Every structure is written in structure tokens, then in C-alpha cells.
Length: 207
Image (tube, rainbow, N blue to C red; front, top):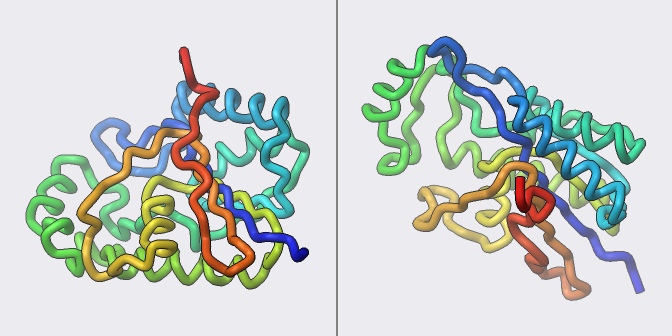
């Protein structure tokens, strides 16, 4: 019997994205570091993720989360730009008030093709990037167990990908994915995918 491909998606820890009114990728907060350490300790203790490859988004908050996990598991991590969160382009580095005005003007939920700033992605572009990236790693690591430390939006897009949802519309239903939670997908022998678990953050219980 051939090995089945498994995918674990882990959201990064709590992160700072606004400092002195400016929106940017400032990395994990103290809470986020503690969350990542709790997940690390859980994975070391349980051995539940025996990944053949660990991948992380190159955004700082995901990279830092992956480094904390990797230090405990004694594994190496491959950084992959294609698993970044939806790219804000020149909106990164703006003050929050101006960004909120842009979001209100463009209203991506009503107009998913709208671009909020030069160099930014719209929703269909984001879904296409994540779907293409998932397809790429499934071919590259067929029959392997893959763990990706990424973002809430990437996990949202995984549902678009596996359920074959319309990439040209914003989802009618949203997800509230907890920081450092685990989402697990499994490829069955008939080549269909099953969702084994979503938003498993039991290591944070009582936090």
C-alpha cells in the first residue's frame, strides 16, 4: 500500500502588525512566542507530526514561529515566499488610519478584484497563488508528510483549494483560526482529500 500524502498547516503565533500607528510585519509578540513554545512542547512530547519536510512562510511572524518549533524538534525549515499571507504591496508601512480608509474605499469583500495599493494582491490572485503552491508541493512531496507554518489566510485558501470553491468570490463563510493551531489534511487512496482536524489548539487551553 502506497504512502498517503499528509498536510499539516500551522498558523503563526500572535503577532504585532501595528506599531506607533504604522502597519508592518513586526514579528511575534511575547504572547505569540509563548504560544509557539507551547506548541513546540506539545509536538516534542506527542510526536504527532512526523513531517518529512517543514516549510514556513518567509514573513517574520511565521518564520519566528517555525524557528521555535524547529529548535525543539531538531529539524530544518525551508522558507517559501509562496506561502506568505495575502500580499499588501505598498500598503505595508502605511499608517493604520490611511489603510482603513483604503479598505473602506475598495471594499474587497464586495469587490474581490480590487487592489488596495500598488503591488498588492486581490483575492483571486491570492487564492491562485496558494492553490498553485499547494499543487506544487504535493507533486514534489507525493506520499510524504508536509508541515507548513503559515497564516490564517493561507489556511482559508486551503479550504478553497480542497473543496473546489469559486476563487473569484470571497467566501460566504469565514474562519476563526487560532494562533498556533493545527489543521490536518490527508490524501486518501482514491486521491480525494479528507479534513482530519481544523483549528486544534488544545496546547493553549488554560493559557
